[in-house]
Image (cartoon, rainbow, N blue to C red; front, side):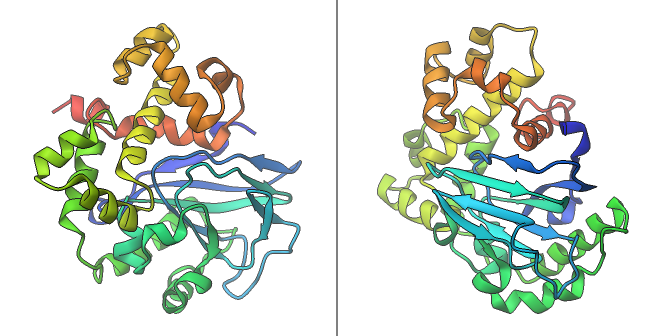
Length: 298
């Protein structure tokens, strides 16, 4: 399996404040697939469209292992929170028929009424964490695996548009801080953000962690590292040192140290590893951030 078998779809403008992008796959597996999710700075909503709305996965078909504890899939819809230092493995044994919806930093809080901190390091069925949303999900997600990618994406867009129309207000401190982190691809100091927003660092840390699920320093660091890894994948003609500088690191040693801390692999080892889904997400990340093609054209 390679990254070409996974599609990235950018959602319409109306829901981009809440949904950053979709990762789509619809195929039977010739052999079991094991995925090792890495921190991205964001949470996810999963629609397992290989099932009918009332069906549950066979316990052996999809299993997540978080810090050594197994969590078989028991619902068509799951919410997965932030990853920090958690060891996570996801095993697909028979099929990969899923839309992964990458949510904006505050979307769990604003759309589902779930503090990000509640879901950090967890992946749980939608009925378990937001039972009031199950009926809405059943109404919107009706397509099975025989439907087209466009049909699956259209029902996801409709679902999130309906939620967006009733979204709760964003915390102004959190929204402003997230905007600054994302504009700089994470390469900005928390102290500078606090100064710009005229907010106490302790206050920023408290509200940011509650809403987003991770501290602001971690959020900025993981965005910066993800951007650096994206450059590693897609600027293979440049030196590692040049890429480290472009991503805002002082030198290659600082980038290597950061990657070892968050991914347990340095730049070279990471490039040799087969992080299929992660590589696909990072490939699409070039559509975001201040150095993306869309921004560069303005």
